[in-house]
Image: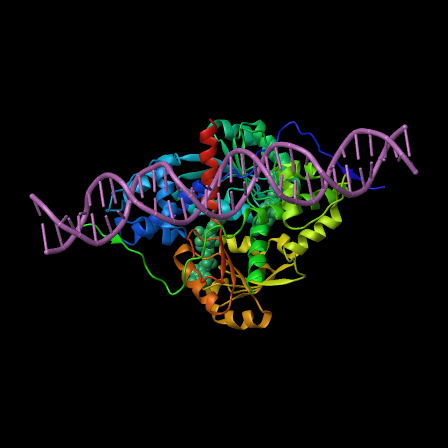
Length: 221
Length: 221
DNA sequence: TCATATCTGTGACATCATTCACATATAAAA
DNA sequence: TTTTATATGTGAATGATGTCACAGATATGA
Ligand SMILES: NC(=O)c1ccc[n+]([C@@H]2O[C@H](COP(=O)([O-])OP(=O)(O)OC[C@H]3O[C@@H](n4cnc5c(N)ncnc54)[C@H](O)[C@@H]3O)[C@@H](O)[C@H]2O)c1
Ligand SMILES: NC(=O)c1ccc[n+]([C@@H]2O[C@H](COP(=O)([O-])OP(=O)(O)OC[C@H]3O[C@@H](n4cnc5c(N)ncnc54)[C@H](O)[C@@H]3O)[C@@H](O)[C@H]2O)c1
């Protein structure tokens, strides 16, 4: 007798696929490239310059800007500073965004020490771990017991959390965070988290990313 | 006088966007879910069960399988083992795939110790770092100087590399790897790497992923 | 100041992805 | 064995995303 898996009904509904739209992702890519050009001392560029750098067509660049009502100068291209400001405007880039991290294992420790987050005004105000031996104050960020989640979330008005706990605990921890008012989760555990519609989950699965690289190398050869 | 960035011509051409197609990504997601169901003791499931778990519609699940010529049983659903085998077949999942990692900083160390890679038959045979003080044999994987890249790549027939070096060095290191025959790169540095057409680059930008979570939380609120 | 080459901005078009709908097969029940 | 309810498999319809092509604007140089 085979055991058949039927649909399980959860209190929370699954969220729709493709949370992170490609056009938005491209906006982030453009910004990355623009910062690179600026660092090299440029002030202006053309859609095809940016396209070349970002790995998309010039048409795509112009279309994206058109869709977001970002304007350049006819014949004169785009001023990098203006463009950066416009993009930051679209992506609602704020001054300081507070967040927390749960799971201070290998990946959690790396993320907490990642300086680029801070440069981009994304501040991890505290991290949490179930293991008391990890609850010290190294890494520049306090490592706290989960009991303190509510305090910290309330105190810093935290809406976003990074999840770096084992797959088996990920959904439980996520549920707890959502109950405490978290609205966005960046999840590194290899599971598809379920969450209510008003909560954004971005699952990133590094194993899958690596395996798809392998897939394409085998396809080419 | 403004300094304008014109197109720079590289020896290598940029590779086309959307390297990792969404339908392939879904295949990985399905596999992840199937392994989960199997662990829970199920043998069979229906397209809507899998869809619910993977966060896509049942139609999408069936269409994907149809596109890849994966068959189930009319009325009877899909046998999980058969499905897993079919998916592994499509993604050319091999027995052992050797790879290397360059850059034993915070993220590099986490990745080298990530056990799921080994479980999925993706073996990091060696890692490399420019800093002599990191060239010890901790972490279960030897940390070698870059001079040994060629030896190791040849010896283990390595085609895939993980890049975890600072953004400023990423393109240089990538070029060197490509010269040595590497055909696939998983890049963690926040730059869009340029590579010849027959080399697959999967750029993953954790900062962008986090920022897009923030974007959507602000949109909802 | 004028002429011109060239880059932007955006509808029209094409391509790709997803959903719909139903014919078909079959597991399970009578 | 026959019936029936239900899940699959896949073209056709819809919707989303990306490319093309060109009108319009303007920086640049004569
Ligand atoms: N290490 C990597 O490179 C890597 C890469 C991709 C994904 N991941 C995923 O990230 C997650 C963490 O991986 P890791 O390698 O850091 O593992 P790890 O075992 O090193 O760390 C997990 C940490 O989470 C803590 N923890 C366990 N249960 C908890 C709970 N309920 N609440 C709070 N903390 C809890 C543990 O004490 C530990 O410190 C896993 O899901 C893993 O699959 C890791
Ligand atoms: N730490 C994170 O959580 C995180 C997250 C996302 C992306 N990244 C990116 O990953 C990369 C590494 O980040 P990190 O935090 O581990 O930095 P890190 O400074 O801790 O590590 C970088 C390592 O690369 C080595 N290195 C430098 N130049 C090299 C070269 N030419 N060849 C070989 N090795 C070289 C350094 O010796 C160092 O060990 C960066 O590009 C960073 O932006 C890091």
